[in-house]
Image (cartoon, rainbow, N blue to C red):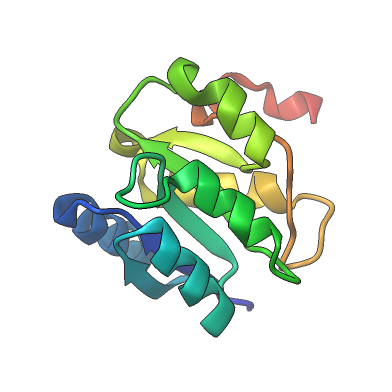
Length: 148
């Protein structure tokens, strides 16, 4: 079984701690690293095997949207799920433009949601899939599984 290596990018310690706990509780996922800024996320993704990045939209220095653009410049950019405490409507246009796989409210992160987001981002792609399709976790919750 391939383990999905996840990088957590957030400037708030409580969320970093919670995200690490969720990743450790999700079968098939492991913490590849934890950083506090967009700049550090790019450096970490270059230095490590990172499959998935959980990145806050609002970060000190370059924000999560700009960091996502920079990650695209890597040879094999990781799948990026942007997270925030703000309503997805506030960011949806900009998130779609940068090619994030999904947007997730921080309060909705749990092992099942993490697995579902990864599965949806990588459907029909190789293990290190890269998706430009924007979705929110609420899209998944309302989708008819029989239709797909």
